[in-house]
Image (cartoon, rainbow, N blue to C red):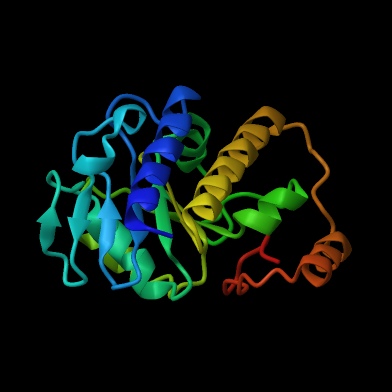
Length: 223
């Protein structure tokens, strides 16, 4: 796929996420790792709804800005996921309402932030880690993500939002959307004692669809 097409894809998915209210204002950012090891990244203070393909930040493999606008300050966040998940080719970070809300609740398991409510959550986004609060752009968040050792596809940053890696831009976006919908279900059902998928049902999904997410140590809801 050409770089021109990848630029257009970032803008197309960004606009879709913005128009459906999944990341307001100039919040959120998207990155895509290229064949040469460099990246395409959305610029700082840019609305995902109004991206210009020509103004996306083009970074070299060593992080130098080669062209485009100044990149998002969340570069350390993206770099940490790429470094710790060899399969990652795209990273999406949003400020989506329900995921942020879950990250602020007491008693959330940091190793399994959401329970196994639906098959598609397990197939696309689970397990989800919860990290403590870090100031946006704080390089320390990168160390925290590297500390997860690549065991998670999706991460919730407390009081901030989700960060999701995927083997393609489409996969990362779809996983982020699935995470947000699962967070919404979790909040709607909180206190109602909903049925979760059973261990046998989870095992069946894993066997049928070849789910490859490693099980995080100590996670109650991992598959």
